[in-house]
Structure formats: structure tokens, C-alpha cells
Amino acid sequence: MKDFLLKNSDLKRVYFLLPVLLFTGFLIIFIANILIKIWIQGNQVSISPINTSKSFQYPVIKTNFIPIISATGAIIMDADSKVVLYSKNPDLRFSPASTTKLMTALTALDYFKPQDILTVKIASREGSIIGLFSGESLTLENLIYAMLLPSANDAAFAIAQNYREGHDQFIEKMNQKAKKLELLNTHYGDPAGLLDSQSYTTAFDLARLASFAVSNPLIKEIVATKEKVITDTTGTVVYRIENLNELLGINGVNGVKTGYTQEAGQVLVTSKIEKGKTIIIVIMGSEDRFLDTQKLLDLVHENLSFLSIHP
Image (cartoon, rainbow, N blue to C red; front, side, top):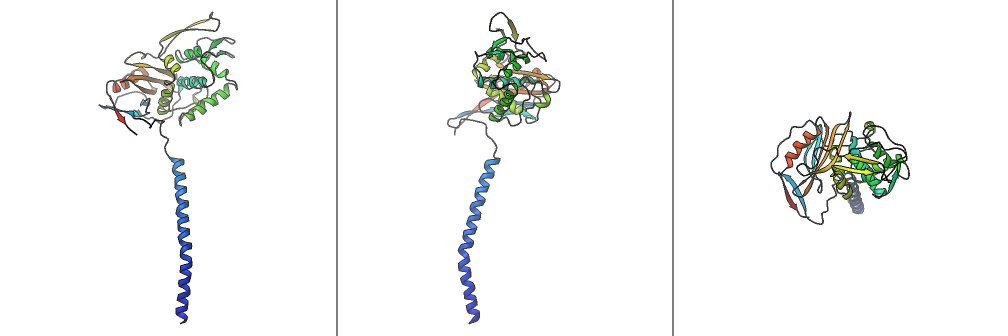
């Protein structure tokens, strides 16, 4: 009888504990599920901003071959979809050199209008310049022409100096915009691309930056210009400037920016129209940026098909 009562008592404990154990189990599963969702959200790969509300054209290389280039890093990217068609060390960091000026132009257009008048506060004399002098006034548009065609450092510094909070805060705005555009391996130390030790980017990030730059109508027009005459606001000081991009106008090339420092080597960002689509080509750490780019142009020229992708 005692054994029976003992067993009956144990059975009652089991009946009592069973709901508690089940509730505890469900609670653990519920909490684990929440933690897994939080982890996934925090670690998921960022996807390029593609409008999935309508179909888009997905580019594919029809006949593939491996081009022999001197560049240490390179990439071919479709500007609209951000699809990578070819890459060589796409995530290796390099100094951006004067391709920095693409970000300077994009950032400036966030805070100034093209016809706003900017005054040169301290004229730079370092590297490539057009010879601006302190106290001279030009429109932002003319300064961007000077910055993107002959790659004038004095124009880039003049733009940064005119930001309401000063030069250093303008650099901060450039880096904030880099994060906004999801350039996760990019940082700028100055508006011209002179500070190799403080600036870096990758071929992938630079291609993304270029795709956003050429989507801006003013920048797109400027980088497609071979030569231009600009003046100060009085019209008495005249600058005749030429684009440094030797490939401009060849085989659909319509931009975008050269770059060079001793540490960066030769850099070239190119945009090309292929079947009505904009293709971005980036060459970094090159011994011959124009020859390397030409080889990548050959890879995509009349060699792309576009598949319609529906959401």
C-alpha cells in the first residue's frame, strides 16, 4: 500500500510538472526563434538597391574569356542592377587617388546648387591645378568642371572650403555619404585624393560610386565633356580645360574619371553604353590604365545579353 501511495504521489508530481516543462520548452523555443531572427537581420548581406516592383534587365556575358591586364584590381559592373560581370581582386583596398573627386562632386551637390557662387579661400598649389587664386569666385558648376576634367585639386579644395561648417566637416559628409551609398570599404581623408594614407576604396565600391555619379544629370554631362572654357564670375579670368580621359568618345565611352598617385598607381573609372545600358569599368593599381580598360571594353563590346527578371 505504501509503495502504491508513493507511486501515486510521484505520478501527481509528474502531472503537475508536465505543463510547467512544456511551457518552459515553448518559452525557450520562442526566445531562441527571436534571437535567431535578430542575428539574421544583423548579419544579412546588403543587397544593391534594385527596384523589384518591376522587371529589370540582368546582364550576362555571352562569350567569356579572361583578359590579361596589368591592373591589380578591376571590375565590370552593370550600373543599374549592380551585377558584377567580371572582377579581379574586387575587395582589395587601394588609394582612390583623384577618383575621390566623384564623391566630392556628389557631396557638394547635396549642399550647393550648380549656380551657387563659391569663393576660393586658400588656393591650393599641390599636384594638378588650374591656377585658382585666393579671393576668386566661380560657380559650383564651373568648379566641378575643373575638378573632373583636368582633375584640378585647387577646385576640389575650394568646394570643401565653402561648406558652411568648414573643410573638415565636408570630409565628414563625404564619408557619411559613402556609408549611405553602402560603400563599406571606402574612406576619404581629403576632397582631392592626395592623402593616400588616410583614404582607401575597392574596385567594387568605386564601381558603385561611379554608377551613382553618372546617374546625376549634371555629373553625367560633365564627365562626358572633352573640353570646356570656364570663367570666374566676372568673366575676365578664363580657363580652357581638357578631359584627361583618353578613351572618351571611343566605342560608347562617355565618362568617367582618371586618378593617379605614386602609391595608388594608375586608376581609371570608365562608363560605356552597351545596348542602351550603362556599364562601369574600374581599373586600379595599373601600369597602363587605358590599355587595361580597352581590354575590358573588348570583353563587353557586342558580347552582352540582357535577361528580363520579373519579381
